[in-house]
Length: 269
Ligand code: GLU
Image (tube, rainbow, N blue to C red):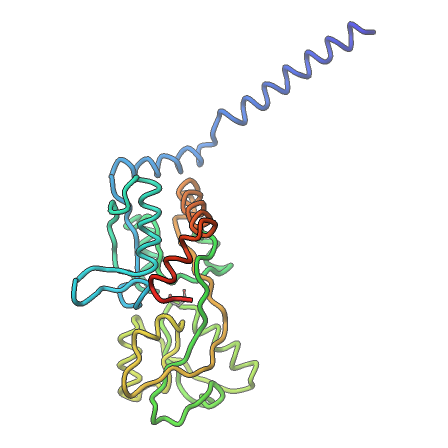
């Protein structure tokens, strides 16, 4: 009886060792491909990042220096440092709400740090890091329009960007208030701003951080803010190894207080 149980224990421990050995050493092919892609970034020696160039303090091309700078650029640098050991090994590419997804799909950029709101729908197509900033949708109107709150936009036309979350957020808010609004969609923010100036739209709406770059002497941002927008860093869905490095870096920047320091540096709360 004793002998049988000893033999049984030996057989079980052999099976167990076989199982654990297999799971820790053999990577699935998608894990392998994914870490190969991180290796490809290392071999290339530069991290390609999509950023905004028209959002002051986030991703903005400084007209005086010609350099793209901001909170999101600094976050991208921290990730370049993590992967390549040097924050300057970074190649920035200008993106818009419309182009950032396709540029990730085609592999022209490795990741996007560009006021990209994390949504359940988008998570089906891309990996998102945890959120590094939360903004809200705002409204920019002409000072002489008489529009003082979202309610005053009943029957009016709002200019929004294509592929942005703004239209859905505004429609939900309009439904809550029982007002009717029309939308006009544009490919870029300068186009929406021009439409506001010419009177083609009554309001320009997007996240407050983006709107702040377009306020002029004749326009103002209304106090109404809604639909919190959690920004995350997006990367290709199948590149899970890169997504993990990005997410770990954001977690680290949060826990060591660096993220707060960067927010302070760029005047963000
Ligand atoms: N953050 C919003 C979005 O991701 C607004 C668009 C933008 O980021 O340009 O849809």
